[in-house]
Image (cartoon, rainbow over all chains, first blue to last red; front, side):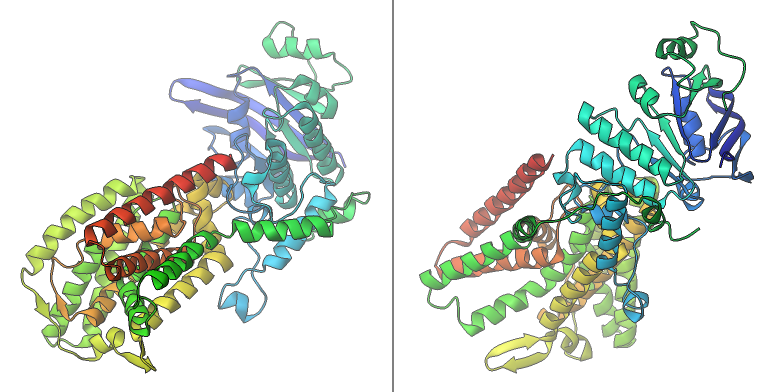
Length: 258
Length: 343
């Protein structure tokens, strides 16, 4: 159960003269929530973009289940089973929840209706959407046919997370999922993250929200100056120590926490 | 690995089940009816018809209604193409000019006795090709559709006059009958053009609401970055929309023959603006991502009903334009307000 699912070695990413990622390592293990924290400009977003196929690294390699992968676009990463929930949610507000869940992966009707007339199986998509919401214990949505623009920020986040959980067969990556949410809504999203982990899919959580990180993460990847400075367990270190390592005020511990 | 969607379901045993009570279900059903974007335009159309039938003698006559339907054919078909483009968040200023060039190409080829089928195919090729040109520039270079089609409009207006300065006459033949011929149901004339435009509306409505392509068109207009992130090939969707719109303009060109066999580079000077009017009154948002082709066709009918009714009520045609203009602004204002509410 403790094998490495997603791994990166020596990732380098430069933008012009700026080196955003300078030989960073990364590993995500089965069944864990790995928080990725770092100061602004530490290069954590660039690292995550490499993992989700959004940018191509200049050097280094990415391994999924021990095999080298080359993502040229987010689509490649998705096809490999890595789903990303972006900070500015990727949804079409005028379309309903079920339509958004299946956007780009629509299910067609069986038989000639689907193959010749390309008719969508709306019922099936709604049924699976409901099932997915039930499985994740999401009770805050009234109806699966509500348009997304009628939802609150937290509900939208819930839909985005549910979509990632539904299609992320290997890894779910979340970029600041609680940044725009209130306390109660944040708690809902953290619960969701735990439930996804409990279904066996490891989650990468990029966040500035330290209490949230300490509440939900199994391990914390601390990024500093374009590299992985340390990986710690939240139980072994106090929040202040972690922030100290992140800002360079404290020396990082030598070993990577397992 | 099992089905990715059902897989988490089995492992999450103690999940809470979402239940929709019958009360909320009725509420959502009612909500759906009121959210139906065709409702507003349809109500306006019915209201206008009722008003004119009260104030004029002839409005509800079979002759008049059949005439309105026939008049709706060319602009209605053009407006369907416009709707597709507006749904992606664009606008087409060149559709009238594309259609006019299409009519000239078809007419001259047919007049040169090269054969009616050749003429038809050539017209289709020219219109769809021009659609592809704007589509490629918009999707690959990322230029604003307003500017691209404005440029195309200017070019095509000149090109049409260079191509032919005179009016070309097409003799009655299979080509004109294809759109102009028809049957009488009593005194109600059903032309082939009317049948074709109604069929086009239904086919497009199906494609937009019941296929993945249609959902992608809405998604691209709604939030193209989001569409791209979910794996939709945004460039391909855009190109397909412009090419399909071009093909619809060719269909409109063909139908223009059925209405009048004389084609001239100066014909249909207001067609483009009429299509934008129909799209807007039909409830399609100029911001993209919201709207229906049914609404657009109803919008085209509303404009014609107003013109016909006001004419029969003996009102100066200039006032008709004023009314249409007010209607356009009102429709956009309504859209803008409802959008702001939704945020």
